[in-house]
Image 1 (cartoon, rainbow, N blue to C red):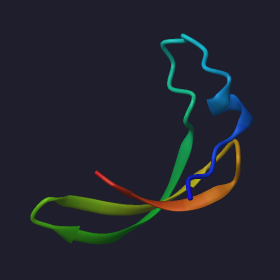
Image 2: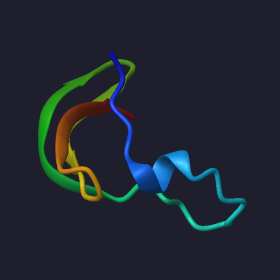
Image 3: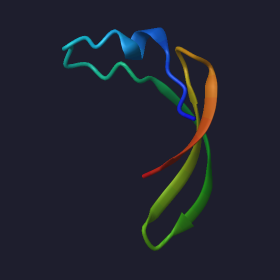
Length: 51
């Protein structure tokens, strides 16, 4: 289930990225990219991001 925050749901056409993340650490590295542990600042939800 995907979480959302009020800032993300507003649907503004602003060129700025409304998703603000704080990176904590690298969880893993592989042939296809890196997985980071991050916190979505506006909603304070922790998640892993593949980049």
